[in-house]
Length: 363
Image (cartoon, rainbow, N blue to C red; front, side):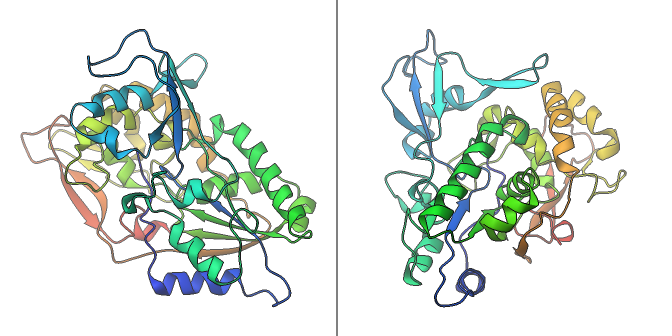
């Protein structure tokens, strides 16, 4: 589910970021809006279900933290978590819905806390934008005044996030007004980069000239990632030794945002091999066959729904700063040994990148 680049910035990266953010004159402190990547927003939920996948799972509940909640990721209980957070795709309406009896929402929109910490308990494993916010505070910023958070339902792609873009525009206007009509800096991470680009291209140039100082992107997933191809095959363990990618795959592949993050035809050649087997190879030219052979055609439908949102790279009309990482092993191809098939475990062939975004596709 979480196809985002690691955001545990080095001191050098923070220094570069701050040099961009605070380079305006000493008399002006441009407020900041933090826009997270995939998996970068807290989620709350409430249950009113008629049945469950396991006898230990709750049918009814008061409001509780769904993501990130480490207590829900332990053996046995994780089955309840997957059933609660997964989406159901309708290939007629081309939309997704939560599981029956599950109400999910993104809490405290506008608060920086919800993107600084994925875990409301502030456990270290859930630290996200927190170190960046701390550095901004040291340089004169104030949480929830000049540092705002813009979380969203990261399970969904832009085609199902229009309400978010309305909220984001209102938050920027509010932050601008509360800071003496000072233009706002947007800091976006990973999938938040293309989300922000799409948002900005919805606005008039006059609005951007008035409200936006600049856009700063950290490890922007501009052209997608081969990691998304991997998730459809074997899932992703979130970098944890005690989690199973094959178990988490059950909910990860239900997210349209995963289809949106598939390698873009603007960055990958049509015949560039993404998955290699002794029976056939898969590339963008036959990606439909990949979904067919995986027996998951919903993934193909979601890919068709979201592909138009990967093809418009119109300049956003604001000052842009792109920071990216390199020299981290990053999967660029799945290799299945002779005699094995897509239901087996591939060897991951790595290349350059930041651990998620492929190096030759990020700049």
